[in-house]
Length: 460
Image (tube, rainbow, N blue to C red):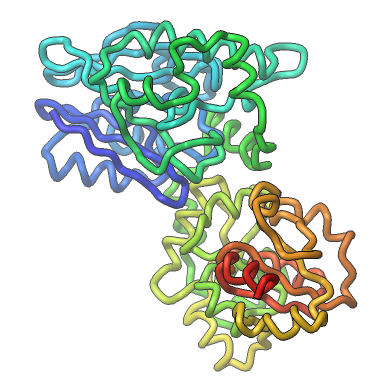
């Protein structure tokens, strides 16, 4: 028996490959089928099942393309209704995979169809659970994503989650290994650990939501308080996962197209797409196509794209570092942005050589910021970190507008003012600077340094 966790840091997402006696199952695959097909080919295995723990909100699952490529059966838990063919498992139903068994445990709460898959070894002993968004390491799934007006409330779903955990999961042996769908960095929970697996026994001892003496009322209160609004793209990803979507191959064929600077400019002028620059932040600030938006591939790229680009049908042109063009198209497709129209061939160097106009963002470090800060010249300081980060320590007189709120609060800012922007590392402030630049804010200085170094200036 083999269990492989295939973890994707950008989405803080874990997919799983399970194999026994030449038969394989994939749990919660991402959009591209190739990694799973290659893994099975290398092992000489045939993919028999694709198990989905629930309708994912934070990414578009790869079940449809993988099923089409492998002939595997898509399996969802009880109550999962889709517009495509799949098998709807019953609670406690067993699926044979070589010499092992995968048992569907219906665990509603995060969503109504949420299902945990229990792996039993050759002699029927519980070995592992693939808990989806029902149980994380250090946390449980948020219960506010599947609520409906006039039907179940967030509190109702939290109550179901309490029952699911205690009746289906906490009764399992302590040595069972927990493999969740997400880790720290995902918006599907609030206290997730950076660890990507643990024993159930350790989770019973350390996870706040699994306290043995916890009442239902206490559980509901603790898991529902402090939840941030879900990213806007979540509901659209759920819809795509239920209804289906364009094939991954078609998305790549359309999006991974090289455009000369002249062709790039023509598409930009004729179709008015969003020009998305995904290079390193240090390269972006030195020179970029005017009005382009920065979201760097080396950060939490897909979640930030989902947060800041409101329309999944938005046509997109890409500016990337050489060799990362296809990667950018694929990673956009993971969160449902399928309308990439191509990329700038030769990158920004080709654009510059062709005489294309460039814009830039003045960028300084904390030491360079000391003089304008201490002299009072930096009268407009914009802190784009989360409110919780701001409350834990911030520069005197800095205004907090979290990056997630910037589009909706831009009217609070004045284009004639000079703004000093900062965040925790320079990634979010560079995104913010690009958004402001595209809206006509020209007097921007990006303080691209560790927030601790910037805050230290006020006591220096």
